[in-house]
Image 1: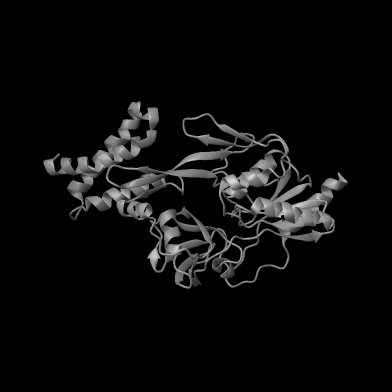
Image 2: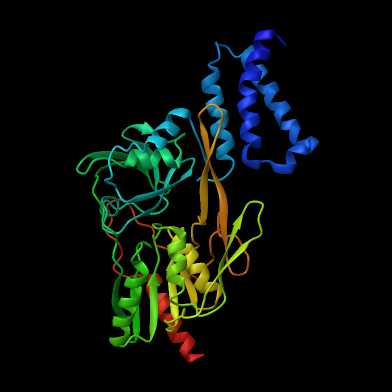
Length: 388
């Protein structure tokens, strides 16, 4: 190998090795010979690129691509941040606090998890599973979730243009959304059928548990004997707040486990005074049910306090931490996941409903169906249990 080639290989290999070993990422596995072979292969690939590619190689560009590729092999919430992004993060710089109301993940492009109730994104008809192909004309093919969230924020009243693809449509749709300062979504309750209360929980915020308690009390006074809690498209809020809400319904037992790398799993259990709500519960879920809502659902379902009705949840119940690299760049790494009371990981698997109901397909511009088959199935399930 030529001297120049060796120098370039060394220049790009050192950060990759740091990527692999920092924070114990590879742990003891790095001691195995079969793990080192990938670093040798990487060195060979870089050497071949440097010596044989038709044009002069931009090593920085190649390196950034390699780093992004390594992070992409983990999960959608893990990402490589270059030095400029880390500096922005450290300074707390923001283009504004107004939002579109979208929660996003990554799957080839950025993909919509959910649109918050009443937000610009919800009014525009964006749904879980929609792909955001571009933001203001900038492709999201290589964008991280972090980058996407930043691009979607801005000053109140400013506009952002999204190029969106839904389902098997051949052509994408261009939508223009106006960013807004979004208040916390309130918990809303109503009587859905004789003896059955309905609770819409659009997010898990600091006051959600108290709001749920108050709304359930009102529904009980209005004659509710069973309760449907709608978690469809509920992807907002910290997982720990979902646990707090779960304690309203679970009197005793393990709610979930926390599993951090290299540590024994930690049980989060109900305690004395919990479980004040005793009504039978059905939870409505779909692929937009995520994070705090999944932890809440896992706690109730795992303790046989609720049945799940609808679609499989997303599988996004984890925590990330920033791991800094020597050159000023960093990794956003998932380091903790939540497990169900049966010790099954929620992250990247989701929760399977007890009663499956597919959400109807909705075309762009099409009004939502007047009937709600998932809610109807949940109400029907209460009648079937009563008759059994």
